Length: 290
Image 1: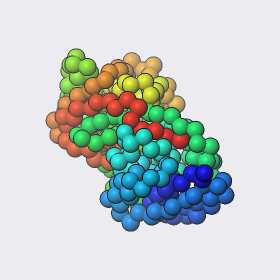
Image 2 (image 1 turned 120 degrees about the horizontal axis):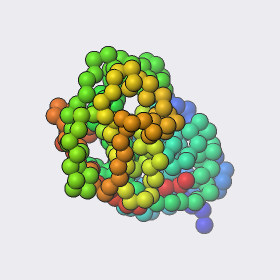
Image 3 (image 1 turned 90 degrees about the vertical axis):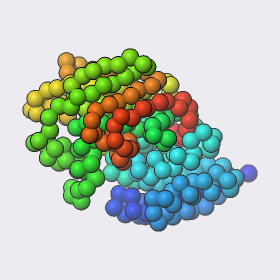
């Protein structure tokens, strides 16, 4: 019996990349013998609505063409549904796809993972009644995220680099209370990040070594450093080599509370809300093709 796949396309992802690769992906899935139902989104709210319709329709799986924001919206419906979920990366950062090992620049290879049908379950973080697929950021990194989201140039992950340099000019350390599994830590810091997977911001391994199916949240605290040192740290994030720096502190737990006055938390590169924020873990909440 043919597997029935719902292909959900965000045509605006990656400045039109989603629309350009959708026919190629559709044809690849169909050529492998899958029955493909294509659903194109016209606004962000469409992703959740369509995902809900797919779950109710009796489709065997869903494949989503888009970036981390699109994946985030789809995960709100697909979490705990048991429906296998594939992602074809077409966004700016693509950190969710990176975290589960999906090819980032080869949409046909990503589609082949859906065809192969091999799945695994992964954890999601939870905060403010939403599921989070990558990292919760609060501090210098969330301010960079806010700036990057407002920029139209440059394209791709280099936008985060430009935003980092711009934000660095005026940033000063923040005061935090970070509570991990009930144990509070009062500290000054440049940023606090909490994730189920290792990367955000287009491949920065802020939570290097994080495992997406161990039932734990990984916490990274970068304590106060000079602007020059912080600038030197950011290239290390792409390789995960920042973990050896004396200003970098890492923890793990099943619940994390971040408090810092006046700071907006970001999750999956989108605003989550003002701190404080309580973050939990939903083990094995999402079934993915990987």
